[in-house]
Image (cartoon, rainbow, N blue to C red):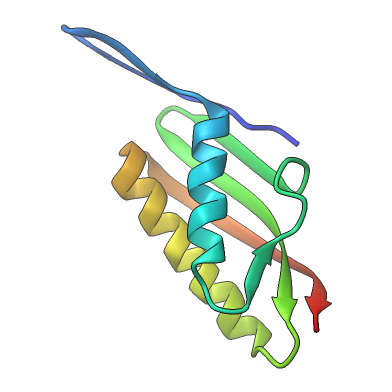
Length: 103
């Protein structure tokens, strides 16, 4: 999967936020949602950054018994908030795919 990074240029120089750092933010935020686990964090996650806007696709496993639409929406909110606050990027979309259930 793709993990784009982001470069911020200013008069003081540049700051590069690597794709793997953004991926770590996404995984940590998603897994803060009770009942959610990121499936295969290295392959089940896609991050695309273009012109200061980020689009994320994340594959999840959900705990059995979770209300899946609510779980997906909670992950979307948590990931978007974490990316905005940690990177300053505009979040274009967080697409969630619930691929399996954990017992």
